[in-house]
Image (tube, rainbow, N blue to C red):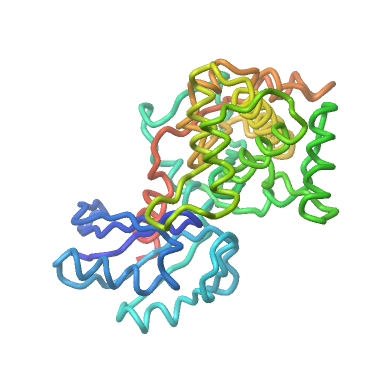
Length: 343
């Protein structure tokens, strides 16, 4: 029997799971906990706290999925001000035999291979074509993208930094949003992640509010302005993107509704861009922390229409199966599978 820690380390939260595996590489969960990533200066104290709480024998190995590029077994998280993570340092400080770091979307990719039918919602059905790629994107704190290519009896996983490519506006309002972001942040390059992410939802709302696209709900506006001023006590911090999305589901707030319409259409357009690049006829999977939570809005939106809106190439995208991942722990599942594969 082998004990291992699997982790999904994101800019917002860190999920750790302690599992025990047998000789058949099946596993049983012994303990699991979630932590606010920004409350800690590094991964080590989170793991130490977790292990102290589990009251289980010490694990031998660990695999952590990281929200950022992993190069030569080291990583700096893209949206978190931690010191550099290094497998040798982590193994030494945590007294583990082996530590693996993988990109969070590499972990999601491995997890996709183990999803059940109940773990997905299909937005567009199409026949699966063997020996073609699988593509994945997911908006959360940032925007992750990756793909899998069939290789032998399995798949080779390729994480990317596609979320940092250019945001490509297609409507007058989106062009105004682009210029607004350039001016607000004093930048020339606006990545698609600045629009298709939790921070993007807030940025779209701020833009629409500031151009007075629609009247602002006073209660929502007060919360957003308090958040902008960073005036909430630490224990009362809010997620403005979640407030905007939840308010949009009521259908009674034009400003929040338009915000989510623009967000979903930008998401769909980027999903179509990714699909054109890889022609993933085994499926395009929409993961991340947002899609499953706003699924009712996505189902009512023009997501697939915008996804297919690629001119002469539209017919190609009609053949791509498109799924929303409902399992919020797909990255954690992928970490476990990767650790088992490498152990």
